[in-house]
Image (cartoon, rainbow, N blue to C red; front, side):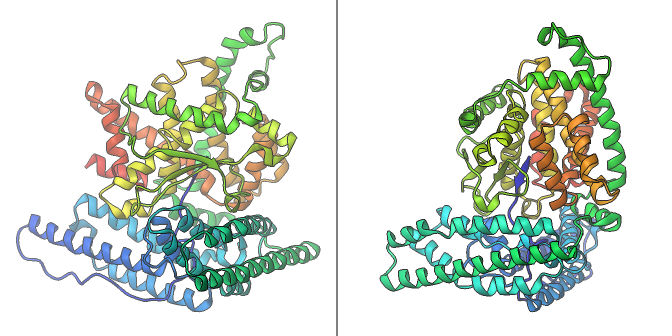
Length: 595
């Protein structure tokens, strides 16, 4: 249930330049319309200048967005780069403060809010959250290299030269990473080891064979091999150092807790989600929605019980009868070897349904590629995700990453097959692909607002995918089969329980045993999914809350518009307009659509 977003500059290491960008606002002559137009032009010039500056300072982020001018440069995450980044962001906020939002048109005012939040968020992550210090899993060199190798933006030899330049910096990169780490969490140490081993799978002998088969001159091929060997040694040394640190911290009981506490959770929620409610308010609403879903699912269970379990007496307790029926229905699933092929088979069916029902615009010229999740992206508790190109290279491939179930072992694989059964697998594909993440990100890349496309809001992105699931069922996907709606209820409970567990773990001290009971007995999840969800809760903060937050805002707004417009409400027009604003916060999109 994850949109695998490109590395966000709010989380990345510092660059090495300072610039304020833009110009000063002076007195503007003329009527209000001329003044607003002039201010808009000044603000647009500032935003464009600041984005270019940020792309140059954050070469890894630029690569993910489809800009490769600085792809040979590697951000070394050291003290000097963090200091430079701090000064850059303070100067950026000072320059932004020269603009008066009230003197901008709604579109530019929304961009102002997005930029201000991004700058403040980047400062907060570096200076207050300091995850570069206790989260070793943020250090990974495989992602940018993989994009360069797999994106056909230049001739093979040119791309290999860029990779070679990046490999040369790997030893210094991990030397700086080691100097940064101070009392990390055991959970992030473990994840860092898994992902670093995945990095070695990218920088392996197959890469060397690709270099040998290229048109690079012999001297460049030799230099590439030398740099590759040195990079491999640096990564292996990093892994060994992490494992030694994990052993020592475990023995001493000196590791940091993965729980971030109420203050930082609320701060992170405000910056990441940008909703009109607090994390605590979302938690309370999630509890209410959990109770509503239980009532709705119980009604379906009572209706279809005799159809599936005619010989079994129906339990008197609602949660018990819901659980038993879901347990029975979960036996219907594909074979383990058919899991990925079945996902590939369903994608065109979903596209056809959206087209036939005229639900929103699609782009048949940009196909979705289903692939096995690269090893460097595994280990964070998600079985499926989407890797999409940035707005500067919208023609590049979009990947639907699916982790092969065989990698989990026989028992876990069997559990996953029951979790992603005949009905749930359809909902998963709606969420990840059409018209979920894949479709939303296609629209975002076409948005005329580069600000809102580049600085995507996680709650909008995840919220849209969750909204798409319910919308598709409402429009007739699955022919309103009650079994599908029952399983949708289970899936919706996952979204709600995400928020409950997220806040519970980091703020209320929710322990593993109680979390597992909640996930298994009240959200009806298989052991495999519940275990991975607990793992995600220990590795992330706030992200699990974005699904429900975004969905609630989008669905509420759609119903409000439907009530206001009555017979004039057009679902397709609503979807296209909503998605046309890029991946902006839902509250910002609502404001723009209302104005």
